[in-house]
Image (cartoon, rainbow, N blue to C red):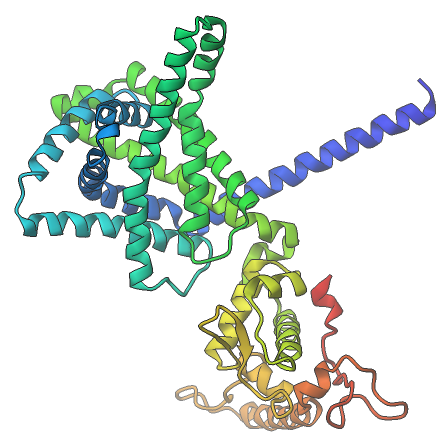
Length: 456
């Protein structure tokens, strides 16, 4: 092996090691974010809500399913396959209990049915709220949109499941009648992967549809794959543990189904939430590791530079009489969705930007009148308050310090009292004119943070 081949192999090993380090770093980042977002507590809330909503959800879903005679014969098969594939070891017992509960629900008066429907809707809202936390969404959808989305999911999911199972059964029958046993057996092996495929599709659709945010399909698919793999692994480990260490059966006896089912729901929701964290973290990770800490991890000068970069793009768009969508801002100021969302929220709270009904962001301040000093104060950057007024503390150095701070603030006002329009103008200043003075020229105030630092 010559030197070039050895050098090529070393480069390959170096790239592989770098890729592994990057992957491990991303997994560590996702796990830390999962913990910081209190996803364990969120999974507990979803578990409790699911326990209340599972009966009305299945009752409504199978009522819609039974309305179509072509699928009525498949109802029991779908119900059995769903429970046994999603609930390891105790699927038969859960299926028996659910059958009784749904039969009782069908005999309830109208007010009882309304109560069950409300509990089902609460599950959807709890899921939406948990995903809003993961994706940093502060503006929920309207109530009408939520209810319509909920009804679409509940009504269409059984129909798609019935159509899929019906087509699969028809395909198996046709192949057997054609004496194509050599094709049937391999397809049957592939059919064993159907639960994983359904989980993958379900998680991906959850990550795309539920958040009030534009989620890339590839990111949702990656998150769905991670969530589905963890769910399948959890099912295998959970089933093995229940068989080898039947502690719940020993302690609770016949009532062991309830705590086992609750524990499994908690595990399942934890895996789904981790997949959501992965899907939400991928755009941030691609933008660079600076986004790991969010807005809290930025220094004041970095926050100011980020705000200036966003206001610059909005100012340029306002010249055309349009706003900018969040996705466009993320593309033009490539620092990650987490930082863009954070700075937009800060600027909106300070009444510098607004979110329109057309899902666009616009600047609400006149950049020709607003100054850099005003922006810094809006972001909470700079000295505030006075050294006096600390209870009974009255020392000689306080007065001297107060005079120094007043002089520094006056000097800062003289330096930073430059309009943002002149500061953010892309044209270079005229030759011989001091930077940071005049209006409409390409100025850079003394001490201002270069926008190139944000774009890197």
